[in-house]
Length: 372
Image 1 (cartoon, rainbow, N blue to C red):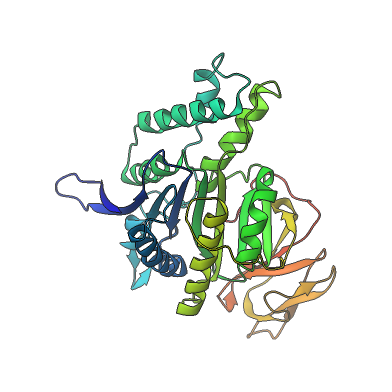
Image 2 (spheres, rainbow, N blue to C red):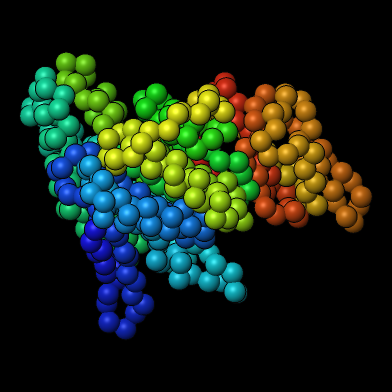
């Protein structure tokens, strides 16, 4: 293993940051996995899982059991980790621009459609190798204008040619759930089972250009562009893993999550571990377009009538909003069947604020699909 320190924003007279990455195995020796934690810097459970992963990877490396290449970034956002507003960590949005740290990642497919024109052929493996080389080149040519884009370039440069990408996050309050591309559903099902995920959300394009799509969506966009005569498989299993809620920081959870991720890497042939029996899945894949977001119809105290992980029927009451001044209570109901998988941690809301999300099996939304 070797550690690499990436300088971020090093101009004299202004704040500077450092990003640490840990590299195991050897480039070109097999499949590559890239793992990063806490791109939203206030999502602490991800960093504890990365800590547990690093300890295990150190051990496996010493024992010669890394079969490919693994890059681990245990704290992916030093900029966000440094942001504190009135004593509260503020790691989801860049205070300088207001941009969500996990949005607006560079999508290189359009550039590659031009640079690869006339160069791909009938050999899928050769196509994958050429696409990865061109994608690395496209990221290296990116000239960021600010330190946040430099951070994004640095992260994406380490991940763009990976076979497997784990982007570790958490929600405000939630059961464990996953986001991935529709083309990756079968490949990601074992991970959902290993992690005991309650929801697995699929999308071709969420509309926000998050990190996982910058790595994964590239492949099906190019496949659609070049057509069936040019075989281009979905060669990067890019997955956003939502590790429950922000307050779910426990050793037992982190250890279990780390072991589940390692078991998936073992199944992908990247680490040498005895394979454990695959648990029965707790969910089937559902479309991101089928997620219903419920918002507060008035200001007041939020009282949940359904619990996280509970199934909700169409028309069922999910929560009350109680105005403590007028006494008026507004009951919020689901409009379709699904599983309540994520909610706000706040218990007093203003009108229009987010309450919760319910994962249904029938798509009904379009346009931007991710919450900010």
